[in-house]
Amino acid sequence: MGINTERDIEANLQIGPTDKGFVRIFIEAGDLEIPMDFAPEEAEEIAEEIRAAAATARIMSK
Image (cartoon, rainbow, N blue to C red; front, top):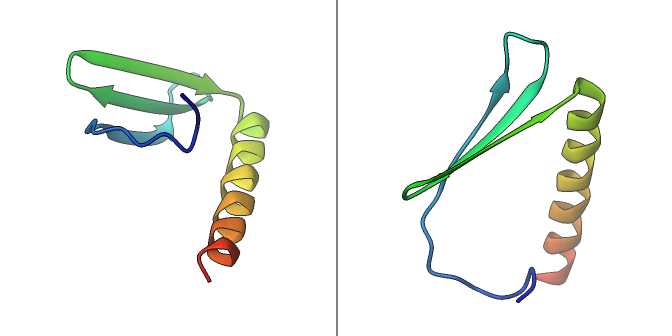
């Protein structure tokens, strides 16, 4: 399985700052909870990767 494999799974995504100065990406799917904490610099890198992927997806969908 890879990034192009579709799955029929519903999940909730929350993103926000923690009281320790990290950025948390929190994924909840059924009984599964995945908290992922990142330093602000890492979170900015992730945001840049998401923006780049969105730009590529726009080009590919045309």
